[in-house]
Image (cartoon, rainbow, N blue to C red):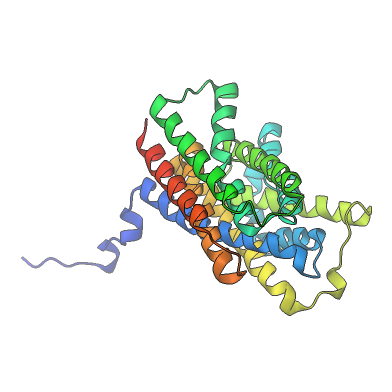
Length: 305
C-alpha cells in the first residue's frame, strides 16, 4: 500500500522546537542588538545627533513599521491595565534618557557591562521585595561571581576613565534598575510581544515629541545627514525598537525574567569586544578576566536552582 506524503505533513524544524529553545534563540538575537545599542548610545556624544534625535529615531521607526498590526492588537491595547502600562513605559523614555546621558561620559564597554550585567541583581531584589522569591545559596554565589566580573571589567579601565565616571556609572545603574522593573513587568503582563512594542513605541514617541516641543530637550534632526542617521535608524529604530523589543518580550515569556536577564549578562563581554573592533577602545587583560568571570557566573546561575 503506497503512502502519499503531502508537503503540509512535513513539519518545519522551526515549529517543532520547544518553547524553551525558541526563547534561547530569541535571546541570542537580543544580545547582538543590545551590544549594538551600547555602541550607538556611546557614539551619540561624538555625532551631531542629540539625545532627543536618537529618541525620536528609536520610537518613530517601530511606530511606522508596526502600524499594520495596530488594529489587530487593539483589543489587547484598549484593555491594558494601568500597572502594565507603567511597567512597559519604563523601558521607553526613562531608560533611554538615563542610558544615553550615562553613556556620554563612559566608554562603550562600561555601557554594555552595567546595562546588561547588573539588571539581574536588581531583578532579584525587586522579586524578593514584591513577590517574596528567595534566592538559593548556589544562585546567590553565581550572582556574586557575575558582579565580581563586572567590577573587574570596570577596574580594568581605571587608568583611562574620565573624572565624570561616577556620574555616568550612577546614571547607568539607575537605568539598569528601571530595566529590571520593565523586565518583571513584561513577565506579569498578558500583552503579546507585538502589543507591547506598539504601546511602548507610540506612547514613548509622543512623550518625546512633547519634550521636544516644550523645550525640555533639544533636537538637531534638521541638520543631520541621512548617512549619519542611518546607523541609528538601523540599530536603535529597527534593531532595538522592533526586533529586540519583540524578541525580548518573547524570551521573557518563555524563559522567565531572571533567566533572561542572566543571559543578558553575557552582553558585556560581547560589547567590550565589539567596542575594541569598531570604536578602537582598549581591551586589557584585566577586562578579559572580568568577561570570563561574568560568563562563568551566568552559566552557573542558569544551572543553579
